[in-house]
Length: 444
Ligand SMILES: *[C@@H]1O[C@H](CO)[C@@H](O)[C@H](O)[C@H]1NC(C)=O
Ligand SMILES: *[C@@H]1O[C@H](CO)[C@@H](O)[C@H](O)[C@H]1NC(C)=O
Ligand SMILES: *[C@@H]1O[C@H](CO)[C@@H](O)[C@H](O)[C@H]1NC(C)=O
Ligand SMILES: *[C@@H]1O[C@H](CO)[C@@H](O)[C@H](O)[C@H]1NC(C)=O
Ligand SMILES: *[C@@H]1O[C@H](CO)[C@@H](O)[C@H](O)[C@H]1NC(C)=O
Image (cartoon, rainbow, N blue to C red; front, side, top):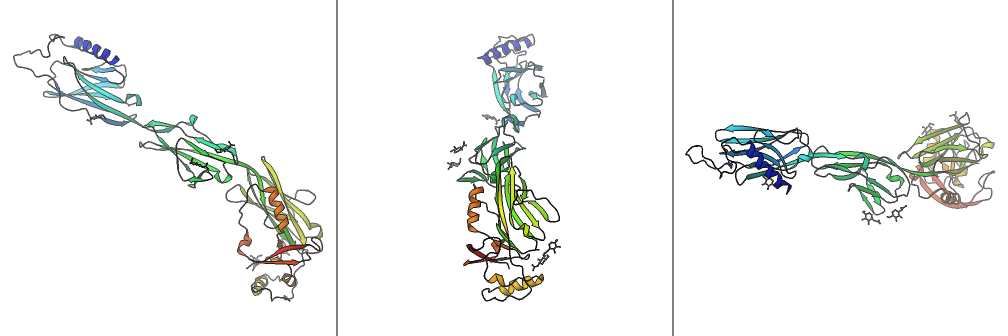
């Protein structure tokens, strides 16, 4: 209806603009000579154009026998008269009109500079014959995708086991599609049963997020118009510290050095330290060396405490402690006196098929371990330290610290295990008379 109004206006306008001598209500043609003049006609269709925003575009309307009629350009959807003949009617400064004269044929060009998305649509070229002649051409304006930060997620910190929804909103023309990926190309764990490399859609919902889901996520918006764009969203998963202790009972002879280990997992990174039995924090000194190395993933830490020249006062318990804003945990390692090695050859070797290996291993460092191996469960290491895992202790430890089972690589996995159940006198200080199940771990 609005269009009709405009077209009506156009007819008036064209009449007004028409040179004198052409009657506005004449029947089609006013022959100025006796030659029969043909009606104006379009000689070609208007080509449709697809153009990225920001470019200039030109539409061509080719006409023959125009005579003193006029050609007008209109935007159909906007019901706007853009140009009439050589005049620009619209106030849009980006519109202009030119024409090209070839004999009887004329081409009228509509120019749109710096095309914008709102310029898209149907353009009409019209001749003001009594029954107006029109033809159409389409302008498709494409716009590369653009992510709207204000409507999209930014970096977040969440608690482990919470549900997380990441959002990504983009615009562009055609409307962009959104795909999610992890920055390191690992799978996205949507829930317990679904893991995918890519997720399509504006929303990415992760149910019961775990520490393994921590990292950067990419939302990628694309719509066939290059370039695609992406946004990187960092997801931090916080949880209270956990500990894993490979050896909770460690036998060491007097005057030897011993290194104790704890593995922690925590996010944010925990403050890790060692304490003595009396609760005092252990600091680096001639007596102690503490070391800490970041694992993979980076929420893992390997803590080591070396005690030099072990004395009687060193036997007992040592604790490793990990604290972060989400909580704290500690684990206990017991150090007991084990029999020192002697330089005499082993007296009982028949139980051990690979004893020769052990001996050569030991000989290489000029420190020989002997006799007590045959009856005790001992981890023979290069430092002559016994590592014994007391099953009861481990159970207790796991109940205390773990919501989740840790899978730390433990060096002993490569070693041979020999199970024995024996009555063992485990030194003077600890476990006197205890019956415990033990393991013999023989290093290669
Ligand atoms: C332009 O597009 C319209 C609609 O999509 C179509 O009907 C018309 O034939 C096209 N014109 C040309 C010249 O391709
Ligand atoms: C997380 O989502 C699951 C499945 O939709 C639902 O059962 C659970 O209650 C939600 N948890 C929270 C904390 O909203
Ligand atoms: C896991 O997510 C997928 C995809 O959204 C869904 O089809 C499926 O029902 C979900 N499974 C569970 C157990 O929630
Ligand atoms: C203990 O470590 C110190 C310093 O590294 C070293 O000098 C000493 O020989 C070690 N003692 C034993 C018994 O290995
Ligand atoms: C002997 O000790 C050295 C240095 O302390 C160590 O690198 C090496 O692995 C040890 N050799 C054996 C066979 O244990």
